Image (tube, rainbow, N blue to C red; front, side, top):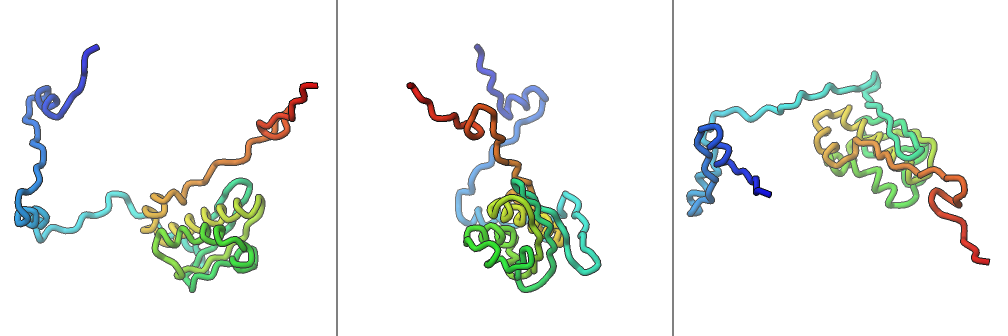
Length: 187
């Protein structure tokens, strides 16, 4: 077998152009400062290449979104406020007693640096507490990006806009659970 490694110089030889020289590190600290300063001071800042999405808010000034996780479905309304989160008519500390579940709820706000700036009202049904917390988190993330489209990039980079598709595997016949067999008896 032949080694088919190619580099920029090989590509330049094929096209007939000169290969770009690799960038070298500045030799002195003064050169490093000169390299960091922009060449044109009057140049305008770069505009974002992706078009900004439109803000989606209802008549009451709230953003609505649906979040899903496992068998849980959450309907979430988000509006500017003091950071109060209400789930099914109860405070988050009452409904989600475990601190880890409350931590899950606040992840979208911490990633976007908006802690304590929005009130959330959510109704959630189906599944268990862990799935419900994940569904509310997904709904908060979606509603946050609809209220402030600028926050879509950090929230999406954290992976909060993607629905977690992992669900429980179904039970099969002849098995105790999805894959667990019944206990083997030799006699």
